[in-house]
Length: 113
Length: 113
Image 1 (cartoon, each protein chain N blue to C red):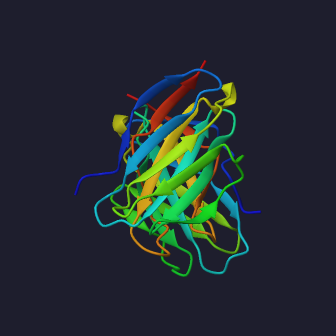
Image 2 (cartoon, rainbow over the protein chains, first blue to last red):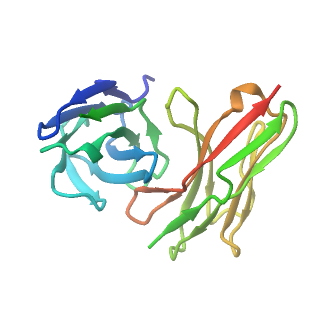
């Protein structure tokens, strides 16, 4: 099986712009979670989607949003980018409703200048 | 709030030796999962081992094993016969009640030849 894929791998944006990141889960996986990783805050949970519905959300401002499509692919969007949004954004997929075993993609490195 | 603590920011081990990484967690859930993930410099987060809280037997995956002490809320990872490829950041994670992973700050493991 192919693993979790994320595009793009690297992104440079200017403060105030918006960005969309994409994640394709492992085939058959219905849950997609997003995490932000920074040196200062570590790994923080953004949100999780299951069957096109947001099931859980972390403590991030409304500028961070996401969605999931019928084929389980997911996108996350960050509007009005701030310098502090520079981070590695990781996507993870899992198979079942209460399956906590998550498999991660390679991440998207976002740099905001 | 659920928290995961890794008290060793950095560890070092000689090749072929054994090393133990510590992790403590704080959860009020009765049924939960615990994980160790490895993140090499390439950044891809890799699942190393998983432990179901209801199982008394410690999980083992080849050279990797855990010491799960439920009453003490301790979940340490033992790496036997350390190899150069084991060098990475290691994250302990608690499968939260909402399906998201709660990560510790990580332990950077160096392997000396």
